[in-house]
Picture 1 (cartoon, helix red, strand yellow):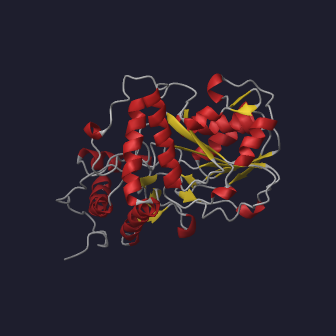
Picture 2 (cartoon, helix red, strand yellow):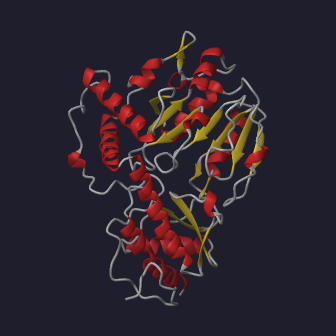
Length: 383
């Protein structure tokens, strides 16, 4: 029997008989974990104040689970904030930047968004280090006497930093990591990270609108010793009378959270706890490896990020031979209509291609089942 994951592409491929059991390959919001069911969520906190004893307990439980699974040291605080990853990263930028010169790294659309905010909104005149989609800039030229902003895993380009070795321990500035597609998928050296942000809707497959902000001790020192020149809206304020608002990191959120979204996050975190942090990473690794085998067996498929050492293992971006926007749109529509794959077109600002989420909430068997469907969609869209 031919292994469908490694079978060569055949022109005019016939429609496969079997679809992925869970064809959810969106890069955000991402697939729910296997076994997830809304009826399994705890609901005692619903209809209650988030400031009630129960509400605070559930929020703190969520924070504690995230800390455990991220292997976050006691030196770092972790809190739930409004606005998803974007809100969390904006909060960090608006409250801490301006004390030093700034360097922004951009190799995909979200990194470019932080450049725009630093230049046009905060008017900081940062040093901007860019690379094309699929590439990583030279990390060795970064001036760490400045505050440095970067994305750990570029969701729209399929490129990630290999590790934190390029960040010096004796840096003068702060490291700001937008880690929304990287947490829970790679080991992170937290001693090298002063600020990190993410949202539940990526590797956890959770709901949107809530962000997570992680602060190391150097970030807390910045917050307590520096006041930016611009006004801060209420949802961005992290200090009171010159001291960190510690309640934010103990379940006392700045604004009202959705307790249903919190319970959903808790369910997933408890599922991840059953796997253990290394087990969660292993699932992403297995999924990315399965997709690699599919790509290697097809001469019309390729990786937008050519270097395996800096290629994402979560948001994997693929090139398609001869593809333009119309072809990709047609392929994605064909796959969705057949219930074979949902939301696999590449990001609108990226080169035309496919994007397959390979995070831990996806099952490897579904990635493997996707290969023949890609053959069929490619052949059909070109006919």
